[in-house]
Image 1 (cartoon, rainbow, N blue to C red):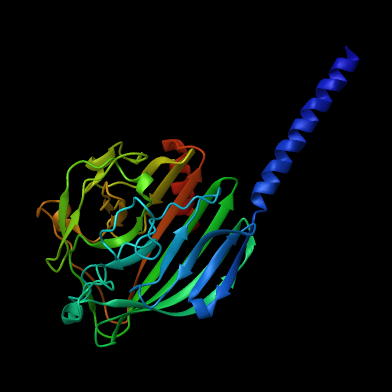
Image 2 (spheres, rainbow, N blue to C red; image 1 turned 90 degrees about the vertical axis):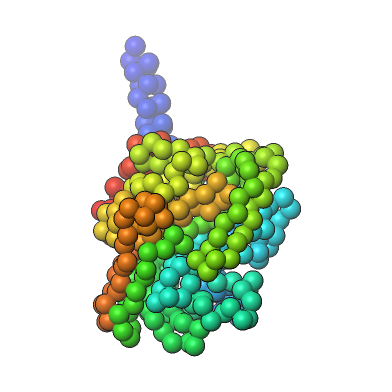
Length: 352
């Protein structure tokens, strides 16, 4: 009996040591940066593997995070228009990676601006320009990057100065991006009129879209139509689920604290979650999330989401600032339960 007790004690001790070692290893994933100014990008590396890149190429009208990878190295963002892949959609060329902007800032459309806009229509569009990398702080389990951007009108006049903190977090097969963006009206008061085109978004890979149904024609803020075609559903497995229990196409125009998009790429089960923050305008946010791969939260576009029953014409007073906080969770190997997502959302709310 004594030998059995000793053996059992050893087994428990070894199991405890293994569990602690595994937890320690997960917490110690090294997150670093590779700055490539000539290529206009900063690579975010986790244990030597690319997680995402902050890029600001001349042919993209705002800085974006692209591509975005799971812990297993699977790309969850659409390739088009930068690196098109066979079988994916080629609509909405302004949908690139993860981005943050808006469809009506002092009357200028920042959301829809892209290389596809004809020269004779460019006067209606604004651009978010990368200015500088303020800070890079590498670490184990978490790293931070701070950037400065300038929202300019077609004449080059700055309307808004943006300062953004990116917190990149890794533990096991979980990857997190916390984006804290502070917008300051550097000249006069800036209006952000009620508009459906906004505000924080990711355009996902074809496999994470919802199975396509009928052809859809979408119209942007300038009245330009874009056709979203019906396509083969082979390998397409996406499904939305909101914090309020609403699913799939029905999530569009609803309000929720978070939204989960889950699906399978190859044999890898993947969940992509966006969390709103209690300090944000209009919390819980409206969701501008579409089956064809646009996954977006819009706190400022009330009118279209309420069918005209409510309107929000937001503004940032001259010299004043507004801050918007969002968390992205990319989980490999399994979907996340409501309880798990609520835990991540609560942690996000406490942290910032």
